[in-house]
Image (cartoon, rainbow, N blue to C red; front, side, top):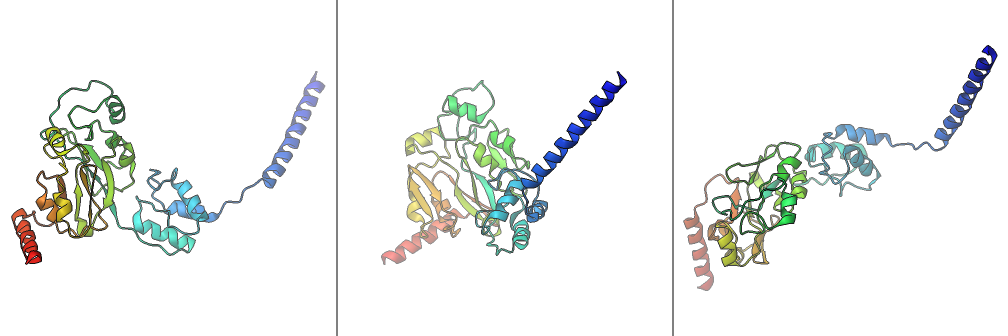
Length: 293
């Protein structure tokens, strides 16, 4: 009996040794050498794994950056230009710095401006709500207020205001990762350049209905009057589908469009002084008189 047990142990041990040797040689043959720069780059990254760079985590970003011929399609929004400078140094690339961005909300339909006409009593999810019906108001394009964007933000940079039911963005915390942009079923959140000294202009509305319908749904809506489009002398405003859009790459921050907007749908952010609409309108009037003289 003892001999049988001993032979069993010896056979199993020998079999285990043979399999170990086989696995060793297989591992050696099929071993994939990984570029050590991947580890270096991963260590320089913030480790947020937010996906804002377009890759499935920091490790995937590092692997792709090492394999790429340049960094044109690689940018870590959380680390920004400072981190990307380190990545470029590791890879020996020249870096084209990008302007810092921040998320903005293209809706100003507060509870006061956009009265509720019905009550939603389902799952508190914008995506679910958007798939079921147009929303609680007459505006089928506005914010649904369930907070999908807030839940998606890993940095606590976005909170739903309980009074307006609109998300508010903390610029100091926003990393421009784009998670909130992807979470909004109505694409109301957008990444825009912060602008010089934090100054920027944007249209806080995406309502594509015609003027009277849009105005009935929301007092702050863009009514498609085209006043801003006709006023802008820099070609920065695109007007289509009854709503305006400001191209931040062309905007000169003159604020003339903001002054001329009859509903206040155009928002100026970060300016050191409040907008003097009368002074701006007078400037426009004099320019037109000079042009017609």
